[in-house]
Image (cartoon, rainbow, N blue to C red; front, top):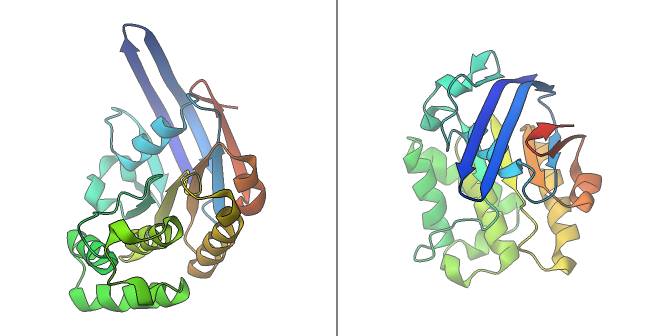
Length: 214
């Protein structure tokens, strides 16, 4: 089980006020868990706090009998695919992936082997030496997935992963992601506002509104 406690975070600006208030939340660590809510509901805040991208004193996130909130971000072993994929445009797909493996301290040979394994599964090996800026949206998504999973991770985060794709590509992309998560047996949090994402992929759903889990 994933157990989150004391996720309290307040934001105060001149014309804006928002409070994240989650005292205790549990969900199963298997398959895909969807976090769904409208714009401004707190999805991105929840995502960023779990990743450690923003401070949240007193918060706990228990996973595999460890409180990940106590660990530096680099030690949490989390893979992330951001909404805009965040690839370095001046690098090739291969360089983007290898850079991630090096940043996580993984052996170069292990990174190369894992990259080739995943690129074969996602049918993108022939595009590895293309510049990231020249890849299609679907290709960028696959490279971002490989980059997220090239080193060992214990949780995968997908932040609105299909919103940048043309509508006619989304069904095939959802199928690809679902098959990959099932094959790799990596628990995944899917952050989305799209009911179709939930219907196609989620094993369970958390609904968030105004910083509260419903």
